Length: 143
Image (cartoon, rainbow, N blue to C red; front, side):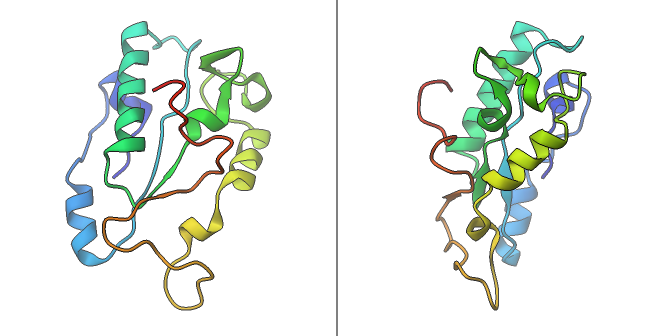
């Protein structure tokens, strides 16, 4: 399942049945929250509410085997609905090389491990794992 900002804009397909198709086949699904996008022409407060609602669902109810919290990783501490300027390519939507480097450093590789030779066993059915460190995991300070 691939959820993107185009789904929030109302321009992209949303295939919510992907989890129900993947899980019985033994496939692990790692979800990612949608990053902040204040400053792009398509931004509205209504779409921000939709993004936050979707991110809350991804973090708390989605059924993903793991979650990478891109929202918390890339947001601007001074304005959490905007991309941190340190990670911004300049379009206020896409992360730059520093943003992707921060992502690479933040991911708990054990969360991605599965199968023979894995150093950390895959979650069992129904177990969910946060794939980002506690410093950026959902802490309840903001949905």
